[in-house]
Image (cartoon, rainbow, N blue to C red; front, side, top):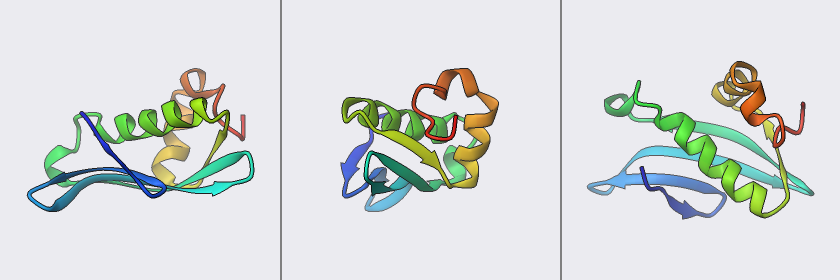
Length: 91
């Protein structure tokens, strides 16, 4: 799925409505992911992880680490620690 880059967020809109979104707060050499939203119609399709991966891709380009403060991202980083170890500021 393609996401639009916004101001400290990536999102997907459909018919003028946000159906998927992830937001982050920039800090010195890292960002804190503080919110992930996926419309119920998209749940169970891996969209939330795709959103996280899009932020990961962007932060790798900027040489920044990610602090997981959103409960979903905290769990994802625990569940797939090997995948996210290099970008996880708390690893």
